[in-house]
Figure 1 (cartoon, rainbow, N blue to C red):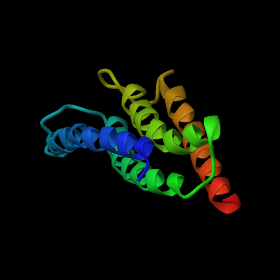
Figure 2 (cartoon, rainbow, N blue to C red; figure 1 turned 180 degrees about the vertical axis):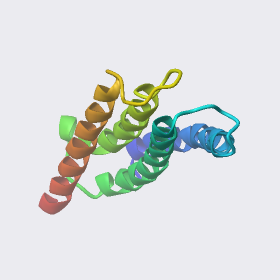
Figure 3 (cartoon, rainbow, N blue to C red; figure 1 turned 180 degrees about the horizontal axis):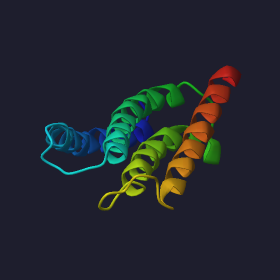
Figure 4 (spheres, one colour; figure 1 turned 135 degrees about the vertical axis):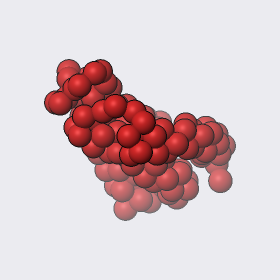
Amino acid sequence: MSDASRVVAGIMLLTIVTIEFGGWFMTKIVRGQVPMTDFQKAFARAGHAHAGVLVTLGLVCQLLADATTLDGVADWVARLGVPAAAILMSGGFFASSAGKDVTQPNRFFAILWAGAACLAAGTITLGVGLLIA
């Protein structure tokens, strides 16, 4: 495993504690202990799920990036695209549904789209890198 993959993977593993906290908070939401609209509950679920899945995918991407011959910016896009998407997409769900009695996304929904762009850039770059290696 390369030093870059080791460092990024280590940081990503440490973020799992925040995902665990989110899971605990989700149990409070589903038990009705946190007042939320149905829209907010759906976005809380989506934000939590995206965080967990994308961190897991990001860990896999670190190993795959080591199998490419990418360097420079392309290497870092392949390594950090999915982890950045984990932060931005989950954050977009949470931020765009924050507040009392919210029933539709606010302007922070744009963060979700920035995350989707990072996810696309990272996976496309890594996929092409693997094909040309």
